[in-house]
Every structure is written in C-alpha cells, then in structure tokens.
Length: 404
Ligand code: SF4
Image 1 (cartoon, rainbow, N blue to C red):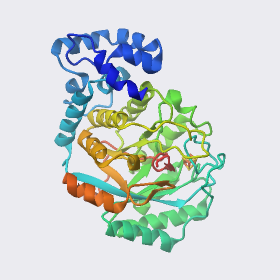
Image 2 (image 1 turned 45 degrees about the vertical axis):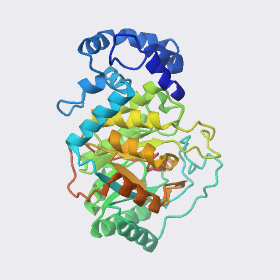
Image 3 (image 1 turned 90 degrees about the vertical axis):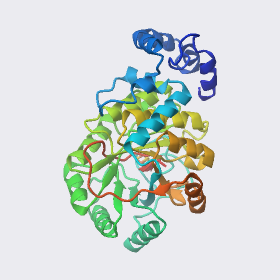
Image 4 (image 1 turned 180 degrees about the vertical axis):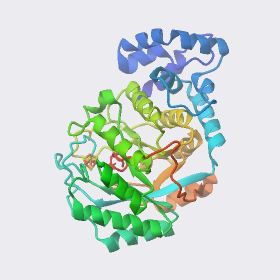
C-alpha cells in the first residue's frame, strides 16, 4: 500500500486544491471498496475543505489542545497532501517546542527474553524461535554503569525495559528496579521503565522511587490488535496506562507501523492515543524491524513517507507531546531522519541497541546533530499532566522490543 502514495496525488480530483489524498487510489490500496464509503462519509467535510482551499492539516493546525478528536478528522489530516501535512506539522512543532532541541533517551534491556507474551513482532517472546536467549535481570553495577555512560554521551532520559508480561509477583526483581530508578534519578537523569502490566500499588511504588515516565505502547489499532497479540487485551493496556497516569507518572505510549496494518489502523491508533484523558507525554512512533524467527519476519520495511505522515499527524493532533522517532530509525538515512525532525519528531533513542535490535551509531548521530543544527533537550523533572503519560509496549520499549 505504501508505494501507492504518489499515485494518490495523480488521482486528486481537478479543482480540489488541497482536498485529501486521492481517495479512489486509497480504495485500491488497502480497503477494497471501503474507500468509496469513506469518501461518501467525508463528503461534507471534504467539500468544506474544497471550498476553503485548505487541507485538513491546515484547518486543524491551530486551536486549543483537544482530546475529542474524531477518527474522521484524524483520517482527513493523515490524508492531506504530503507537503501540506509536513508544512503544517512543522508549524505546530515550532509553536510548541524549540525545534532545535531533540531529547536523547537511552534504552537498556535489564531483563531480556523468555517473555510469555506472543507479540508477533518481538524476538523476546518465548513463543518464537529467534536468536535472543533468555537471561536473568542485569546486576546493579551493570545497569548503573550503563546509565552513567548514557549520561556522559548526552542522554537525559534512561529507559529500562524488562521482557515481562507484568510486574506481578516479581517482588525481589521489582525491588531492584525501584532501587535502580532512585539511583539513576539521583544522577540527574529522567528515568523511564517498561515492565509490562502494572497494578495500582506498583505504579505508586515506581512514582515514589522517582520514576519520570512509564512506557506502555498500544502497538496498533484496537481492530488490528488481535492479529498481533492474543495474550493480553487492548483494554488491559489502557488500564496500565491509566494506572501510571493516576499515580502521577508521565505516560509514554505509541505504536508500531509496518505490522501489516492498514492506514485506517494507523489512524485508529492515533485516535485512541489522542482521545485519552491526557495525551501521552511521549508518543513513540516505531517502524517494524522484522526479526528472523518472528511471525512478522517477512514484512516489507516501512518507507519514510509513511513514517513522516504518521509523525506529522501525531504532531498536529497532540501538539504538546514529545514525538519519538523510535525503532526502525536505523534504516533511515540522515536526510530521511531530517524530514522526520522537520515533521515534528523531537526525541530519539541513542545507543547501540534498542533492547535487542540494532540502533544508529553514536558518532553518526553526533554528526547528524551537527549537520542539522540540533541540540540535546535538557531533562525536565516536573511531571506534566497535560499532554502526557507513558506506558510500555513494545516497539519501543517494550516492551520494548518492538520497539525497538
Ligand atoms: S513486546 Fe514485551 S510483552 Fe511482547 S513478547 Fe516482547 S517483551 Fe514480551
């Protein structure tokens, strides 16, 4: 479906200056005849846009922070002509952030492999035969040394991921995690964890230990979710996100593209995220890195146009959230990454690995920052309730893995 983006432009009806992408082509691409129904249902909105000569991206790029977005509104933003979408996302980005600042996060897998969940993209699942071997939780000295190195290299947020379905009854390992959180926070870094599902008392304990953010990704749309994970429900993910937010921890939650989902699924994911009671503080946008031995090993790589469209839409509908260019960044050239930053991405993972999958070289990232005039974003220690929260799920953290 990705390669048809250019054709959509050609299919744009004459006279509709900035109306969304060519809907008939969209129909051919991924939704069979459903696309025509979509066109019908959006007729009024499209005709208003045609009259005003403005795209949905232009129309929705100003106004108050909203968490009452409709799926149709987000679809129309997502479908806006590419350069118009990019321009308005960049404008929103500049109105809400210093566009030169990019947050650098380092992600460490503190407990790798052997996970009982069946996430189809994840090499850490015990249900898939991959090269990742299960190991015990990392010792204190190793974790703290990794955090120190990350700080010295310019990271301001240190994220720890454990391949767990849930914290559950892992009392002694959880106690270790709490100690790691407190010690790393004491180094002057923001600290994030992705440990699977949390109950209320565990969320409070993490908050009391000094945790900045909790990552729990939704991964994809509610409709497509069961094709990717069957061992945990979408609602269970939302419940963990709510527990983190209620404990006063920032929420980090996003998803992964390239799982075989449709563009409507991508919009569905963005709709759920942007209609949470508070927008996630961080929204990781991951591109699948297909790993041999997982059910998704033969998925086609995500192209940069889809990545930019996703980032731009997230930037417009969640203007105050950090949007993280996460897993899959290693596949994008520096000019492609520049496009993602221009679209509003303002956070990356640095370090050799994202849990178990490769990441960009540190020296390459330094050169890119220099070339693009980017600077590291300083840490922030007050939790914001405004736009964000953080959760765990994989692609990035996730649960990292996907995240990775
Ligand atoms: S993504 Fe997280 S929950 Fe899913 S299998 Fe991997 S480690 Fe387990």
